[in-house]
Length: 90
Image (cartoon, rainbow, N blue to C red; front, side, top):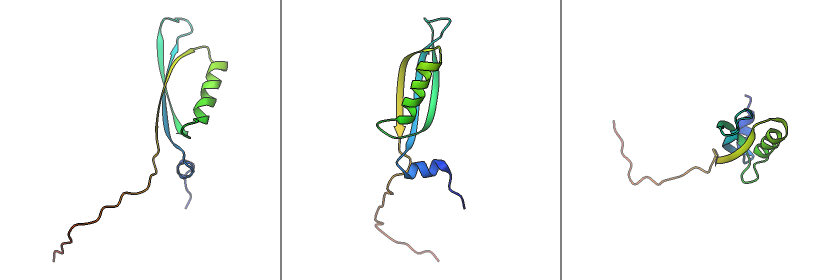
C-alpha cells in the first residue's frame, strides 16, 4: 500500500500553508488583485513560499503589495480522555 507524498511531508513536520497575495495589476497599478497560494510548508521559515515569492518578484510583472500567511499542522498527538463510566447493553 503506497503512502501519499503529502502524508509523508506531514510526518516530516510540514503543515498546510495558505498565503493570500495582494499584488498590483501591471496595466493598472492603482488596482490590487488577490491570489491564493496553498501548499505544504515548514513553519516558521516557509522555504516553499519564499521560493514562490522569489520567483514571483523576478519573473512576473505584478508588483507584490501584501502577503498574509496562515499555517496549520495537520498531524498532532492524539488527545486522550478517561471514561468516567462504562455501560453494557444486552
